[in-house]
Amino acid sequence: MKKSEILSMTCAVLALSPLAMQAQTVAADSVMQHSKGNRLSVGGYGEVALSRNFYSDSGNRYSSASSRKNDPSHGRFDIPHAVIYLGYDFGKGWTLGTEIEFEHGGTGSAIEYEAEESIEFEQEQERGGEVELEQFWIQKSFGRFANIRAGHIVVPVGLTNAYHEPLNFFTVYRPEGENTILPCTWHQTGVSFWGLSGDFRYELQMIAGLDAWQFSRDKWINPGTTKPFEFETANKYGFSARIDNYTLPGLRVGLSGYYGQSMHNAVPHDMEKGNNKKVKGNVYLGAIDFTYNAHNWVARGNADYGYMSDANTISAMRKPNTQYVKPYQTNQAFGSHAIATSIEVGYDVFSQIAKLRADRQKLYVFGHFEYYNSYLGGSKEYTSKKIFAGGINYYPMPQICVKAEYNYRKFKAQYNDEPAINIGVAYQGQFL
Image (cartoon, rainbow, N blue to C red; front, side):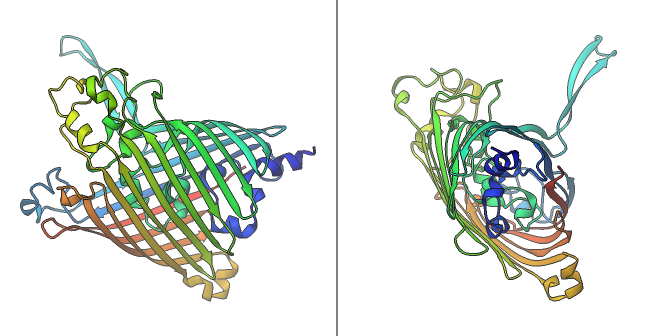
């Protein structure tokens, strides 16, 4: 088999039609976009953001809403994500894919020598943020229809997880709903089978299960992948599936879902005793999403719905001073249901100017709406939020985008709404 044929087989983007590539490429495939026959691929993406938030930044702005109505605004600079892709084609269908992510500038600590405090050495946190290995997998490709990945992989449930790079959404920050109720970007260790057939891309995964002890009222299952150990607890397993269709030119429609047991997946394994051994905390997720990119219009949307069994029982078990929760002291209940929906539409006004169109410059004027609730049906009504946003995305070239938006987070009447202005610069591309 010639080298060029091997590369064509192992690179997902080469197996899709140009219209499908225009509609969107799955984030997990992005790390393998080889060019000019190179075995090594290098790429990445990143964002720099400035926000001015015209609302209180107090921790009790919801529980004491009336007293926080006139609090001053506050501003923030941030680097939400800075990512490096490294991929390598070993040949004979064997490939390696990695994604290293620095969130919010990374993290750091230092050892401080305190000569005036009994000559102590103290370790202090110097900077917030995270450094994560979001992808690290070995893949064997048997053809465009059958590929197996083993390692740390992206879980493509929902629009944002499957397409989380910054040029895949108009807002400065990732869509808020999915970024709140789901792990985002959701990445876990496991095995994936995926392939392409006709106008379809499909994927099935078996991964480490979530941990119900980490779930919360404000973020539902979002913190469920958090593990304080050097290993990923996998007493229980999760299963995810996704299918995307590219039949209509410029349109991609996707269905995705997840099922997994979230109880008895902590350390130590025997923490839940007696009758509580029967509590399973099964998580069920379903999502539909689409992207349309044609005729100078871009539209995206999603609807996600989730249910978890035994939520009330587990919430009661997590209360302080019980025999079950020493490593997870919390008094916060979480809900059995959650929802996240969004839609955004933008039009490239530069498409009507011949000189700018020829120079591949674009200026999208967009509108964006979201509704989500991490505690659906619960007593804390501040978890029900609507997002109204509008602004521009300017592309001086296809790999770079300057974003500006006005964002308005709306609550029930008893809470204060939260307007903000966000400005950002983002890039995304393959360098080698």
